[in-house]
Length: 334
Ligand code: ACO
Image (tube, rainbow, N blue to C red; front, top):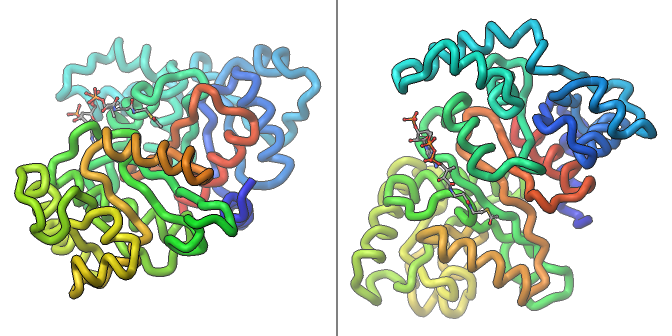
């Protein structure tokens, strides 16, 4: 576990947030709930049938963990009514709302919507799409942001060549997991949300956001470059307090001597610590290459832009991964 993950856990412990683990009947989740509770990282709500949960891991102490069964909960009807009101214009019926309110992902999202929990973590057995869709339909986006997106905290090993980049070797990459082909408006949202995650989670004191392209300041002409130029303009207009610049090639964004040469007046070129990729293909490929070639720890995907934090687990996650993602979610609920 990296220093960064340790510091996120320490921060979470001071916050006393309530995080719902929707897949409460899954063994890895039950074991994580016990550890998180014993370490005091967050208050945990497990969703599922208490008898099933206890029989899955009879050796695990669940003192202090709240267990709620969405099928029998006294709140399910109230949640179903809320879901119906939220989605009736989109074709939701009262019958369908009641069925969905008994689904762990929707029940968890409704807990966030009503303020009964501060954040949700799921994805150990559900797909990314299913987890995000419950959030998108119920929790929706944060004020001023229309796009849910994701980023990775890329933590380079100490002593490696990559450690010279970012803050203490940490560079934030967005969006690498959610929006296949963002338009300029969405790219601007991704940039602003990634800067926020960089300061909240990675402790990056001054996020410097580079809008990446295969062109630097007009060196190439193409409609894909135009999209990044427009996104930069929108992001700068929406968040004038942030250092955001583009379009920049990756070397111009990261390497001081190249930045000075290609974009001499830029306040970001050569010292970027947040990299915004123009689409999901480049973002997803980019983070995996850095993870493999540089041996970087890829912490994420961290979902950003929701009105309350929801984070998606990999289906291959282990108990420690779940513990870390819960800590991040608690910090994001700050
Ligand atoms: N931000 C904000 N709102 C959104 C977004 C978004 N990114 N995407 C969809 N919405 C809105 C829709 O407009 C819709 O609004 P409305 O119904 O209130 O009008 C609502 O959210 C629900 O949308 P759906 O149509 O139900 O969802 P959709 O089918 O668009 O799927 C999803 C959204 C799940 C995020 C999809 O884009 C997706 O699957 N993305 C890729 C995820 C993925 O597989 N990533 C790669 C693997 S992860 C990894 O490698 C680490």
